[in-house]
Every structure is written in structure tokens, then in C-alpha cells.
Image 1 (cartoon, rainbow, N blue to C red):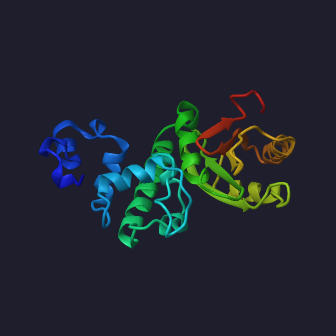
Image 2 (cartoon, rainbow, N blue to C red):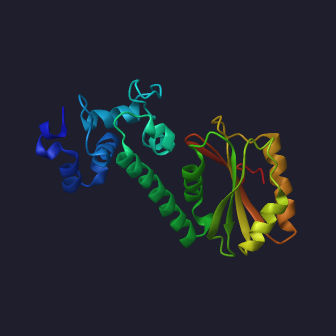
Image 3 (cartoon, rainbow, N blue to C red):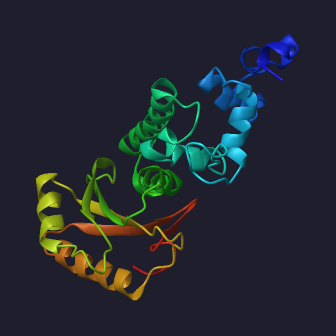
Length: 236
């Protein structure tokens, strides 16, 4: 059934305007963003398939599902390009929504202290890291009030094979006049349990940064749909 075939009050746009965005399902919100479906498939069906089906990711295969809104927003540009019916305009809109979400959370961290909003820190790092298929080490540099100054990707690759240089992290901290940092990296495997190498790296960086009076407040490990705080686990 196409949107035009629905009763007026059940159409996503009219429903949103009458009852607010919280009244819409994930598929209805996505349908508003997509606007149109493809031949033989209405926009609501397409949106539902994108969110719910765990299909393969072949151009000529079934619509590849991303497992919900979080999964879709974690998709790479190449993933989206493989979806029949997602042309450049639709792909750009989905990627723009993700970037807006990142910037909104970053603004919150710039306005509030990191320690007062730990959930926002995890959300910010998940938006940056959970979709990546390789390990990335990031550092959030904070001012004396523990507000975000800058978040930077420092190193790429499997951390056991790609060295994380404490000297580079210290130099960046001095460059940003940081008083504290939150360390972060992702586990593409999905598990967020810290390895022995993660714990050793954390202590090494903590010692190096202490020499220039910069505190390590946390080290957060990001997996698909979850994040672990070493500080909360008593591992710092």
C-alpha cells in the first residue's frame, strides 16, 4: 500500500504534524526521509525492509536490512550505495542525519561537563565509531571544566599491530591546552570487554599524560550497539 492509499490521518507527514514525531514508528520516520519508494514497492515497505530485514548486501539482491535505525545510521556510504532505490539524494539525506546527530551530541558535550553526562559521551563515541570495520583510537580533549574541546581520531588499524604512540597523544593534549582526556576505541568484533592490551595501553597513556598534568578520565570501548566505560568498571 502506498502512502496515498492510506487514510489522511494515518499518513506519516500528517500524523507527525497532528500528533508529534514520537507518534511515528521508525519505519514511518524513515519513510518521511526517503519520500518515495521504487517500482513495485511503496516507501513504507522499503523503509520497513531497510530497518528490519537482515539480508545480503548485493545490488540485485533483496533490500539489505540494517537492523533498526542505529544500524542504518551506522551504515557506510558504500553500504547505502548497494541498496536499490537509494540514489545520491536519499543517501546524502541519511548521511546528513547522522552528521547532525554527531554534531548535536558534540554540542551538548561542549556545553556540559563530561562527568555530568556520561551517557552523552558514550552516545557521541558510538556515533563516531560503531559503524567502522577496523579499529580506530580516538581521544576527546577536555578543558579544566571537563567540557569537550576537540575529539580527534589518532590511530587506525588493529591496536595490537598498529602502535599507539603516547608521545603523539601528549603533544595533541598540549596543542589543545587540555586538562583531561577521554580515550576511546572500537572493537569491530562487537565485544566491548577490554583485552589485556587495552588495559596496558590505558595505563601507559595515563602515566605519559600525568607527566604534563593531564588526567585520563575514562577509556571507552565501543561495539555494535553498546559501549563500556573502564572508569565505571573500576579499571582505571
